[in-house]
Image 1 (cartoon, helix red, strand yellow):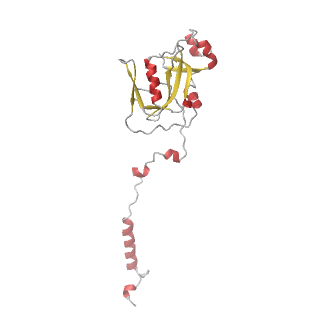
Image 2 (cartoon, rainbow, N blue to C red; image 1 turned 90 degrees about the vertical axis):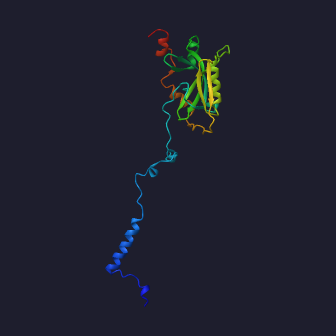
Image 3 (cartoon, rainbow, N blue to C red; image 1 turned 30 degrees about the vertical axis):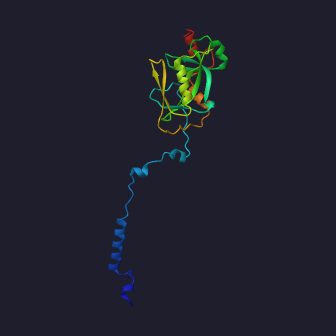
Length: 217
């Protein structure tokens, strides 16, 4: 028999030790994954979508955008509303008013027609942008006219709005980079209104805000 073709004898201690040493050497060459390697622990940007997670809309501020914000407004008309609100400038608060109360409040200087735009920042913050509409005489000051034009422009591009006191109007800047559009939530506009005005809805003449305006409290 050819000795070169002889198979190792499993009962030979020397040959068993040699095989074990060879196996151990191979095992040592296989790197064990680092359990704290950031590359292994990092989640992908669509992680939440993969889990079927839906972000709840719990807060919707009603305010004009800060001069540092890049914003877009929702492109659909169904996500904007022309209405009448009670605006308290000193408190920086806006109240939505029930339609049946409008005749009673028509003479109030704080009761004004506005359009509410659904808007979003580059950081994904959703808010309602209120802008005054022309009065019965059709006139509109330059501040609100320029804001209205800015909000309309923002329906298909990112804009930044900054007040220019010398100009007496807002300056509008458009982003030069090709930035992705906002990821608009599928929340109905009615629900956004409900969240935004849950504590700022006037449906009775006995509302504390109206009593305060009448000097009753």
